[in-house]
Amino acid sequence: MVKYTKDDIIARAEELANMISQMDEVDYFKRAEAQIHENKKIREKIASIKSLQKQAVNFQHYGKAEALRMVEEKIDKLQAELDDIPVVQEFKQSQLDVNDLLQIVANTISNTVTDNIIKETEGDLLRGETGSHVKNSPAGSCS
Image (cartoon, rainbow, N blue to C red; front, side, top):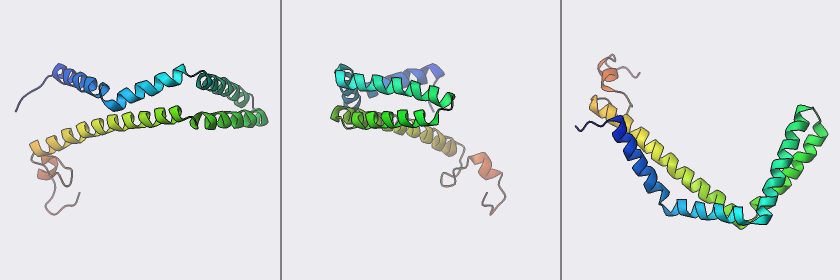
């Protein structure tokens, strides 16, 4: 069995990160984000939403329920308008795609490490138990 150092693992993680950042999905995400920042109408809507959100926090802090409700309605309306813009939809979808990929990578690493530990300790993969747990469990025990 090959032994790796923490530095080896970090170097491989950086290599994997660089590979991911070169994927089509990430490239698409970067292009969509750039289009959003270049679009004056979108920038104005985002600025309006941020300003209204600050107002909402103040209204909530001072207990002004009716003013808060009205501001939240304006925020919802602007957010819906923003969400109807195709490039925003594309950006959000690409963001989800990249996040899903990162989650899959993290889960794959976690599951593989766990499975390897179980195998290397002669544990039970089906029950997810390491060898020391299996060896020290009473015969016929389901725990």
